[in-house]
Length: 387
Image (cartoon, rainbow, N blue to C red; front, side, top):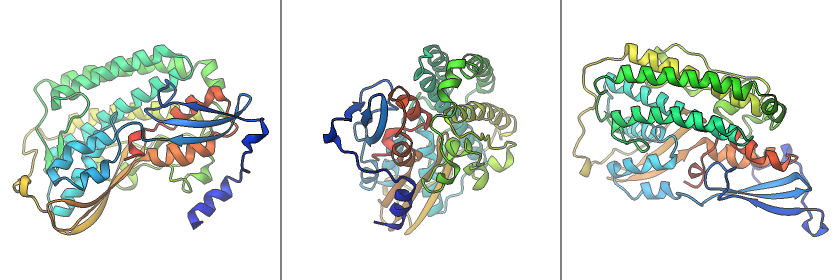
């Protein structure tokens, strides 16, 4: 057993379960189930309505991205990376592009850096809106999902007019971005942000002031603060435990050092705290978008000059580039060997630790009716796990 495994075993000293005793029953939740965050399943062992063990099973959706990318040229990798996380693809585009730029010595134009930051905050809002609808739906508050889907669709309209696509934008390329902002974009974005703010006020009243939601989330699924580093917990799951972990502040990138904001934190580290941190962080992203549109350059290049990308060879090297997505630290470790293909690409997505090690630690002792809500509260996307 490795040293890391020793640490995890010490924090999770549960005896083996004897299924032959007749006391326990094994159930499967997913992969096709409304209480699953994507196509994955949990193998539950229950005693009555209490879960005594849960094991995650993935691989029901996209998989094998890393090896696929290692068999493509650098520009052919570009349309693959966004599939690693469907609801929030732009962070994959940014991390991959930034890694290639660092290895190839490419300078990104100032205007492109502002547009990249804008895109990442738009994607963060979209991801949070999807999460809030799912978290509310796990408790039967279906109307919240309808509201958040409506305003998320408005943000997808902004993505479509900027990039030509609603889901896979493929707008952040090595060297910059494909284009500037279309005419009238600022006005339409301002209208969209106001509509999202109005909707979030309704979400706060109906969801966060709801007595049933409070009773079923407060004190449930608590993540002890001493497990944050042990389990590699990042993003809102860590900030809800009182730790101001935010890559935008801890390891600044793009134009975040020029923007005014502070990481949103909570203290109870339960399902309610995690939901509230994400709700408030969404409002921070709205403010960041307004700051970006007020200060970004309106002229100048959006793309650096690149060599012939069909025969592009990157010098030998390795790097790790990280960013703060809606779920925590997102990173790409890229190794090149001087050829026209990546030697190695490894994706660090928050879902790997949150949906496997952390979920399996938190789930014992949970009522079976709370499994879906607990899973959603960790905010994970399965393709990041089986990538």
